[in-house]
Amino acid sequence: MNARSPQRKDAVDAIIDQWAAVRPDLDTAAMEVFGRIHRLSRAMSDRAEKAYAPYGVSRGEFDVLATLRRAGEPYALSPRQLSATLMLTTGGMTGRLDKLERAGLLRRSPDPHDRRGLQVTLTEKGLNLIDEAVGAGLALQTEALSVLNDEQAGQLADLLRELLSGVPESR
Image 1: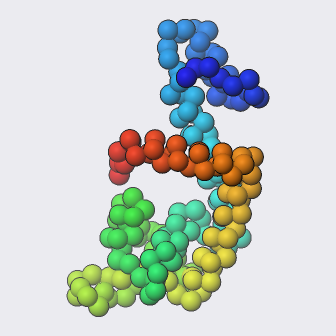
Image 2 (image 1 turned 180 degrees about the vertical axis):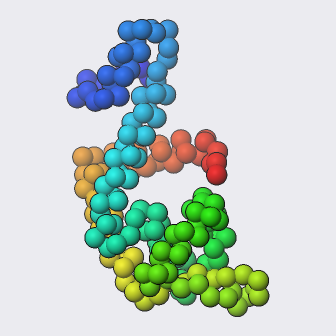
């Protein structure tokens, strides 16, 4: 797999070349893939933060609102369900919920199905905000993906799905 395409070189290529110079015995094929995935993830995360800032939410807060929105009507989940979906500790979740509740984007109330539990529900303000913010996030992702044609984008999605299936999630 170390046969790199003759296309433009990037920062990962420079790193691979440095390793080849000092440790030619190393197979750096995995580094080429995961180095780029890592750099792409960081770059897109930074862009997402900027896209969500006009809505007054961070990427993490966006994720909470989006998870509630994807749950469908009545846009409600328990804090435990949110934590599990977002792979967050309950402490990390509490801070996000506190901020979003103060902003009027969600409300916490007793769970009607569990007297000991809470239910987190999007407010109308939160629903309107997430519907706008998700559009902004998708626009920046679509723009970034535009360097690929539809077939390439589909192949990449398929390859990443396959790769992800072989890596156990950790919490």
